[in-house]
Length: 141
Image (cartoon, rainbow, N blue to C red; front, side, top):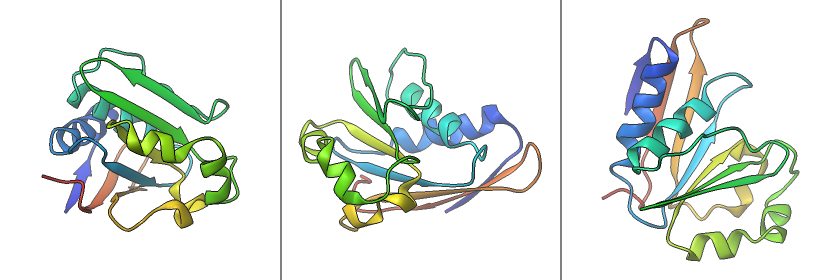
């Protein structure tokens, strides 16, 4: 599926729409350049999961946990070099907690994925427009 968004709000809406289709334990692997809109997409996912929280990039903390009626674990792998480092911070534990895992900079930890993840690629078309490509894995209803 391909979506064209024309502003940040529409990018958030795309994330919200996707989140409503995910099942507990889903992994969303996000790809896109710096400033592409990955965190905006995750902000929308949080809204789609009925989480009332301030979503910010976890660049320095590696993972932010948003807990409410649902759980969203927001990872930023920018500073990691491999999936081994992801496992070192407890990736297996997050996968078994029944929440949704949203992983920014997934290209850095692709060896940690098992092929069931939903892949979201966000490409800048212009300063405000984005092309979002969603390839569903087994985590979609």
